Amino acid sequence: ERSLRFCSAMPQQPTPVAPKAVQPSQSPNAVPPQQIPNHAGMHPTPIPNHAGFASAPPQHQMVGQTATAADAPTPNPAMALGSPDPFIALSGMNKVQVSEKVRALEAVIGWEQNNVFRIKNEFGADVMVAKEETEWYKRNCCLGDCRPWDVDVALCPVAGAPPAPFIHLQRKWSLTCCCIGRPKVTVTDVTTNQKLGSVSDPWHCCDVTFVIRDHQGRKIMRVRGGGCQCGWCCHCPCGPCRKIKFPVFDAKTGREIASIRHEWGGLFKSMCTDADDYWIDFGEVQDPRWKSLLIATALFLDFRYFSRGADGLAA
Image (cartoon, one colour):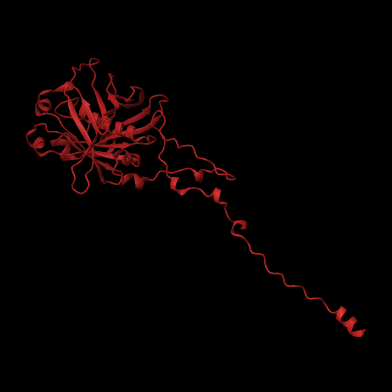
């Protein structure tokens, strides 16, 4: 009886229980498979609106997630810059420099040659080339605002291959005098032979103005350079005389969305040639088609107002 009482008084040992296996899906930090975002679509191409400005495509929100600014898609400039497609390459560029090449024969004897422009990205690398393809008699005999010209813009060749043009600029002959027969440049996609848009130079008594239209003829952008800037009459390597600004405005809202800047090209280029340099800041313009129209506007600007032998004014 005593042994029974002693055994009952002893503390009972708890029966060991095997730990319950935790399933991976029950981890507090685990994310259900349906909530894991697809990283293959983190860099979609921005969808342009009517004026070619950036507007992100609609995102499908995951179940149980709250959309934040960090989840917004961002462009991949590195991938775009290395693309063999010129329009995809343009979509990854924020700024470009259009630099006119100095031609030796033109500098020595003044014989107008076909203009060649090197287009560089904001890092100074050559990405495109623009070459004029105009007959000699049109370049040297059709003086003033009547001169016609054709320019092909191509992506820089790879591995020694010849450059393949992707846009063509055409300015037809026209009898231009004041407000009569104002010049216009038509921009065409060479690969599809479809019109991308046009750039026209309307009459203005004081300022330099351009109107950019899309392929349907709708006004999308306006360029206006004030005629009172010091760079028009005084070409110096410093101060306000070094550059001439041409802001680009949205045709509907009137808000500045981009800019084109003409810069002094140096002493030799200014005294011996009409070669000039231009900087294009695409700003809010994201559609590569509208970027190509801004490049066409800079080239048109050079032919109209900074070419010594033909259109417009002497540089």
